[in-house]
Amino acid sequence: MKMIHSYWAYLVLALLIIATVNAIIGLTQNKEFKDKDLRISLFTLIVTHIQLLIGLGYYFMSPSYKALKTVGMSEAMGNPGLRLLSVEHPLMIIIGIVFITIGWSKHKKQTSDKAKFKSIAVFYGLGLLFILSRIPWSQWFSQL
Image 1 (spheres, helix red, strand yellow):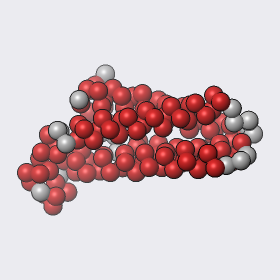
Image 2 (image 1 turned 180 degrees about the vertical axis):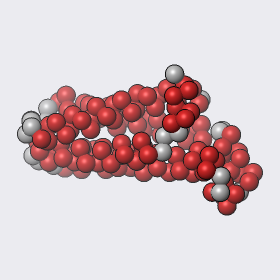
Image 3 (image 1 turned 90 degrees about the horizontal axis):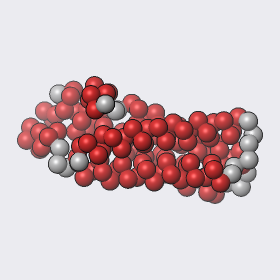
Image 4 (image 1 turned 120 degrees about the horizontal axis):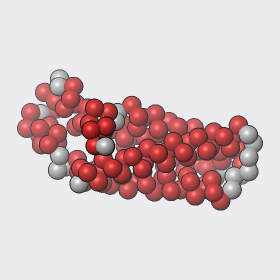
């Protein structure tokens, strides 16, 4: 489960960067919001939600969750490594995915192409920042 979660994360990050950059380019160059833009944004939304489900499944089987249950929240918050994996990473990823979901929902209500690109750019960009802020980088590159 950890391997799936780790490798799927590469796909999520790549698509999220592509979707955000695509929206920024569309916004700054006043492009028309086409089917390609819709598909990039939608596929990114789907892949991030799948990652959330995989991550939640793994979280409750992970050593960090078991350690959190054993030592308690106050002890876990005093341990930077345990805090990152058991509290900060899951919370920030969920917040990031919430922003991505809001961006997708808001873009559907927009009537102009510029507003659609702006919704995707802002909310997917915020989601990307939240996700990047709490990736356990030291473990991430050891997966390669």
